[in-house]
Image (tube, rainbow, N blue to C red; front, side, top):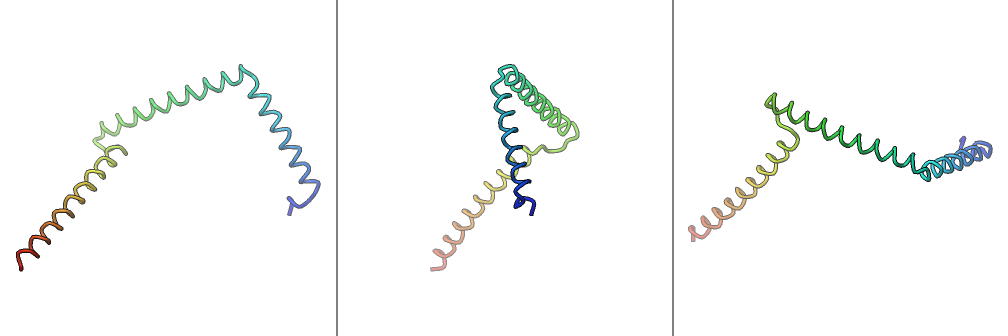
Length: 99
């Protein structure tokens, strides 16, 4: 309903224009871009440290990490595949033995 109102539509368009201009000005400022790169880099380092500390805490409590659970799931999937192949071989052998 508000989107159909021409006044609100024009206000929205002007807001988009101003936001675009502001973003363009910020991204053309080398100091701003360098600061943002530093912030992002520091955030990634902090996340890495947090992940490491969580893994250590889980290990200390003898609880599995997500990676441990995924590894176990892969091993179980591999084991299930081997069992299916063995079942197929046993079935084939029993069919041949019944002849």
